[in-house]
Image (cartoon, rainbow, N blue to C red; front, top):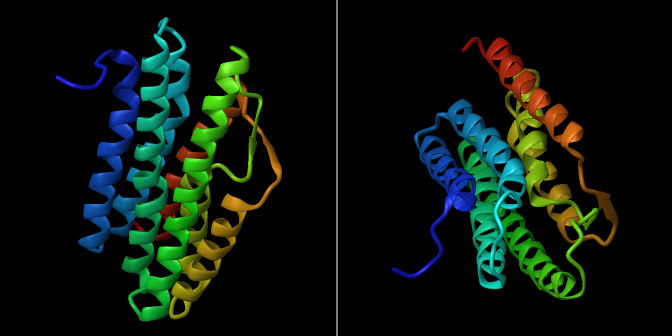
Length: 206
């Protein structure tokens, strides 16, 4: 069998599976379910790097981890938010164009990150301390917060969502530094995600 099989890849695969389920929910117009899956993918992705570091890996295993992480991220934080957009009304030609731009910029950012990360690992074994541009995983917290506004903006919400996708897409490829969160920051983000789910359940009476 090709590939590498050990516990360090499990969370990455769980993130991908969660995003596929989320895309299915979005197609079925179950937007709440899709957003929960987006948050779950964000949770799994946030801790997969920590898990990977608990095992001594070969150079090829590290490269494999980088590649599958980015491929999974493209589906979870590129395609899934776009499909949520389709579910909220971005089903016109311009809406589809915006979704395409969003996924394309996520793809460009992830591919560029892979190039930089591979070069970085050749020169140092230190953990990464910052990112260049907005990490694609950020929309796991941004999108649910934006969707909460749908309870107040009903008829034109798809326009707001489209604008948010364009802004996020720009930030994906804009050159600025973002500090990598510490373990405390990751715990805070997990709590924020849980609060967002509770907020959506309250706003939309789920």
